[in-house]
Amino acid sequence: MKGTFYLILTGFFLGTIGIWVKLIGANVSPFLLTIFRVLLASAMIFLFILFAKDLKTLETLGIKKRNLIYFLIAGFFGVTLGFGLYVKSFTYIPVANAVLLVYIYPLVTAFLSWFLLKERITKWELIALILVLAGVWSIYGSELNLAANTFGNLLAISAGVGYSVFIVFMRFFERKGLPYWKVSFWPLLIGGLILILFLPLEPFAFSLSGAVPIYILGIAFVSFLGYIFYAKGLKTTRAHNAVIISSLTDPLTAIILAFLILGESLPQYVIFGGFLIILANLLIGRQERKRRTKRQREQETGFGWVW
Image (tube, rainbow, N blue to C red; front, side, top):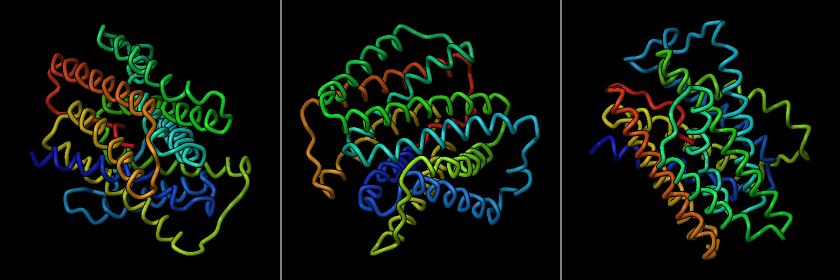
């Protein structure tokens, strides 16, 4: 029960990211904001490991040269593209649209795992594919005539695909037996540094007026709390159950807070599309549970399932 509570907190804190971004508005460019977020979060993780009694810093964070290329790819797709495009999508579309569309990533991960890791695709995952496509069309198709919304929806979908590639690499790291904190810290750090190279691609905007510094620290802090509670939750809750819990708490938190704090309305076609996408995620979590039970993997790290 305690593990489930920690995972609910994970979904809650990570579900607030879109709210913070909306509150910052145009004062900080999305890519620069993402850089702040991931680098500050990686710094917090480093300090946590440094002062943790049960963790040895060099042993936990030490990286071998042969793994560096994998961390570079994971950081680029998961953080540079995944996180970067996710945050940028909030500047074009409502929080609910972005959060729901980006949740295509568990399904895309299933197909990438089939292609790259040779994991079998089940009939339920095919059904989930149909549900996701219907859900995405319900949200996205209704706005094809609005250029701004169309672009923002595409950014959110692209972010989900990028994050899916990241998760496949996390599963690869899991098979190699690398610790959770190592594969959380390095992609954040590397992806944030790579994202600096993309800053010239967008108009530079940076202002520390008003409460903007507090909002930036808020984003980094809730990201850090998300990783901490996720790690604590996985000590008593299996990774496939973590997928199910996060698939419910993260988008629901974002939608409810967007309504209460930002006053964003939720059209019926978004509600319907979101329901289909969340249902598809539950089916994916169900298949993940069966797959891992069949393999009798009692000790799991569940890499990459936090946003």
